[in-house]
Length: 89
Image 1: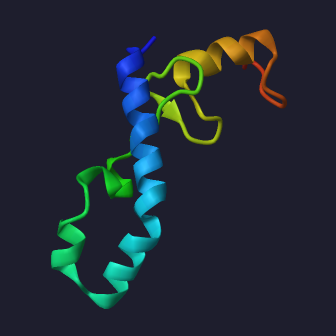
Image 2 (image 1 turned 60 degrees about the vertical axis):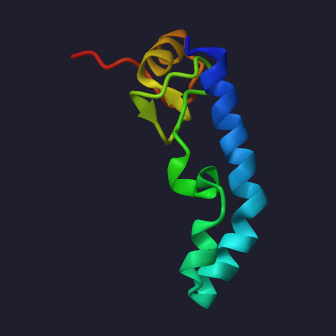
């Protein structure tokens, strides 16, 4: 599982992005690049990292399901994901 501080940092970034979204859009539309640079770095949506909802893992993230590959495999094996089953041939 990811460190609690990393998960908390991502939550804080998401909150900052939501807080400055309108202001960023207005500055971009006006072409005010100097004003845009004065905003906090974490106000940019590019800085958000996708993390697994269950473990907080950042790598191997499956966007469609919102979990990492390891958690996806465990959930699929347990039958917790509708329509997904283990392949066999």
